[in-house]
Length: 383
Image (cartoon, rainbow, N blue to C red; front, side):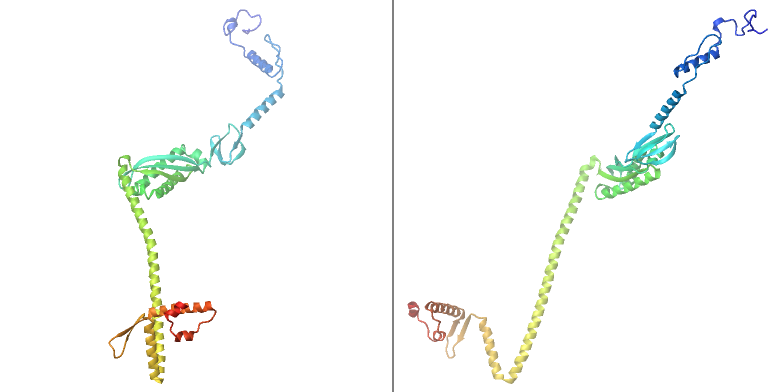
């Protein structure tokens, strides 16, 4: 006879006679859970009670589909994102790179599956750097500089290197120490600052390309290069002396550039004047030689006449250049002095007065009579 058979004598429950303290009924618990779900979705609660409780009401399927549609709509909305014109992004699918470059605009990726990382690739970023280091000639200098850079590969910048900005700092430190350590102090402080910045920029870019950071260095600005504070005064004096040297050299060059063209112009002028004098003297000599040849031909035809003519021409040329003439009287001990300049001057004044009087009287002067008759002082006063 079975232990739970009706009418059995005694309590033959294998769990022991514990009354209401026995284990829960699994079927009953399942039914209660089903009733609770039915009430939640709008169904009527089934009849309960006893060991033979009633079945649960059917679940409303329209509400289930509506809830699923809402969840799907929220999922789709959460996957929409937008990138600005200055931004570029990358897509990770289950943590693995799926798309290396996402351009600006509206995009969608499934949430919880894809992850989108983006950054600004047009913004010019600046990183300041300052350090003291040893030059090739064993002097200490302090260098302050700024590195300007942009992101040219967003995938490498965001994924390949853990901290690209820190890598840039370390590369800048290494490049600067390498270039300064290969230069003398004079070049770092004065003339070589511009070339130093260019060399540092090229070396930093080489390091960034080798590391794959996705960073492009666009400019390295050397803000300050100075000696240590303890010796700054001495170095300032040295720099001032070198600047004075350069200034004096420039002034000397400017003076030379001014004087040399003037000297060359004067030399050219003197050369041209000498050439003109040479040509003039040669032409004059040739003319005198030609005149002498013609005069000699005339002299052969009429020697006496030609000799007299030559004598008169010579006397005329001599008197034309003299203002005083001394005449030796033959047979006497006196010399006659003829002031030609005074004679000509007085003669010109008399002729001017005479012509003026004739014009006032309305008659023309009689040159022949005036030349024959001398004018006395009384006649001049009467007039």
